[in-house]
Image (tube, rainbow, N blue to C red; front, side):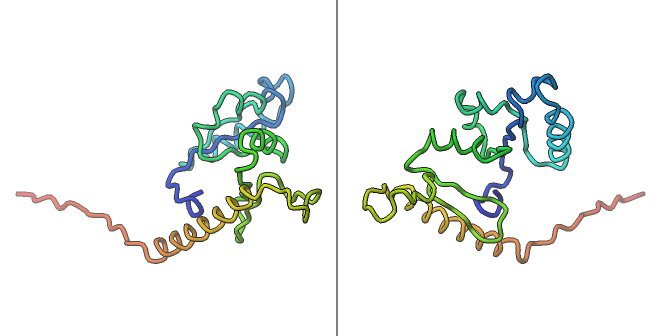
Length: 160
């Protein structure tokens, strides 16, 4: 998020694994035993990470609008609402790779390939986003290549 989208302190939402984020352990223990402690540990290091949020209501209540990124626990948990909200103009971006990977929100669309019926807008947006991320990564490398050193200034006290 920092290098690819130039966000200094991105706000990240984490979705729960179980329905209703486990309902405090009633429907699953992963939120309590794994996800919450992990979020806490990451947040203690200064990352703005929040959750886990129940995935079923997170998108319908527009909570996603408060965050820069949403971490889903599995493919369809994130892509179903994403496609519902942005189909035809959305871009799937895979974070954390050394190469830039974007794809249209509709996926490969093999079923209509070569038929001249595809809407190219999402593909166009995916190409534009890849270009933007490329430039952002280069700018990030340039900025962080030779950062100014911060020197601690010690006050000298005059004793008389």
